[in-house]
Length: 353
Ligand code: SF4
Image 1 (cartoon, protein in one colour):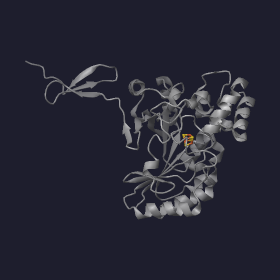
Image 2 (cartoon, helix red, strand yellow):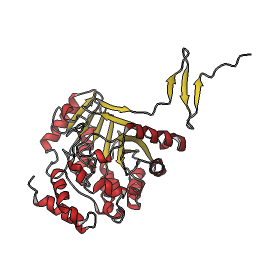
Image 3 (cartoon, helix red, strand yellow):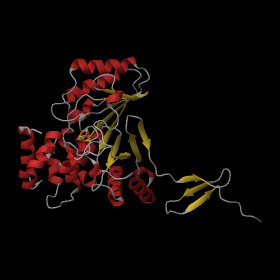
Image 4 (cartoon, protein in one colour):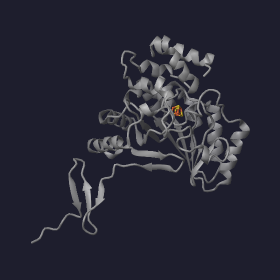
């Protein structure tokens, strides 16, 4: 594969920043040719280069294993393309659409499920394309919620964000506008007063933050989150379960407790999607369920997201447990696990006199 000057520069910068050893530069340039690479100064500052297992580095620093593609992996793991009636729209469920105004992100996560679509060169929608996307939403009265995602929509200028919010505001059947972003965590200075003002609307507007490890909630990220909070914007979080990053109950507990204390409701814990070259970052479903069980006994419901899998092929997002109940042997009887692993019959067996 011919390696572009840009990919070579990316690898060189990683060596210069002490994030990869010089011996890996050529291999990492090959990875950078295949998938976008970017790390913000805020995230780079959180990485301990002396720690080979640093959980922040694992999320953003490219790895040679990304060139290994498992047979079950795909360039479109959750079937976005299949449900895209026009550029910038994904319409998978009757009552909601994704609106993707841009394909650029401040960082490029090594596990990204849209890694084949995001990156420099994947431009923003043109004004005409954006108008066509709004037209599609207008023509479909069943669309109740619009999820503005990407790429990262918070990389758009406040002026463009305001235009998007205004356009959605003017569509009567759209009741909920939800922005998905990593900016408040990885590039918090961008959460300016102008950006917050651009989100003002009488409709329900939610912001869902992508955050995977408690160390990402650094002081500057906390300031950005509080700024959104003070504007009265309800905040949710989405995390991806990642091997070597957050696949232990203590880390997840610290993450979800910290989010709730910042008034961010943990919403989804995503099982990592089957994106190409990401097997080294994926856990098994059984591991994910065991972690959720451990969390269940340790934290309140406020701190518990729903563990979900986006089914390959675009068949939708489903909760994947764990399940605490089974049918018992008698009619109408259930067996229920308690948080300590004990099994109870429900309804309780009546004592004979
Ligand atoms: S910020 Fe989101 S869209 Fe961008 S690379 Fe990370 S996971 Fe993918």
